[in-house]
Image (cartoon, rainbow, N blue to C red; front, side, top):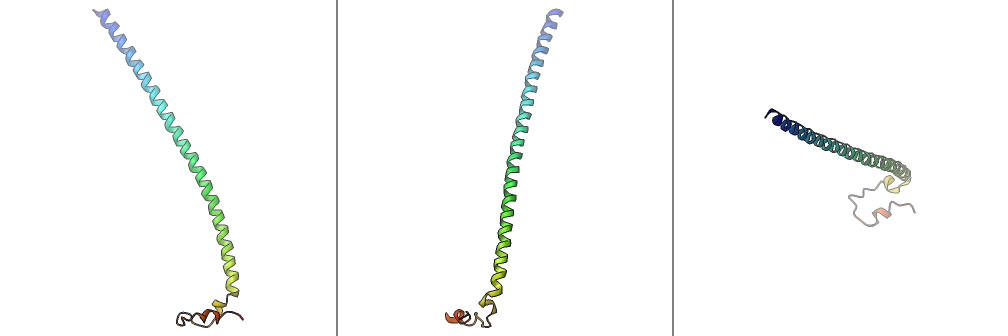
Length: 101
């Protein structure tokens, strides 16, 4: 009876070890997949970040250009130097009265 019981226990141990080995493999595979997914997400975010930085650079350049254009325009704009009050004079010729002839 002891030999039979020992053989049964050995079989149980072998099955338990095999089950544990398979579970460990599954766990390692799951961890690897999770790490791969995180790495892909990281790469995607890095690309998006680079693209956004490039866009910020372009928009900053455009803003500088438009600021210069506005500054140059303000120097010669007849409307900014006109002494008429356009709010109280709602006539269509109010703007043309201020433009150079």
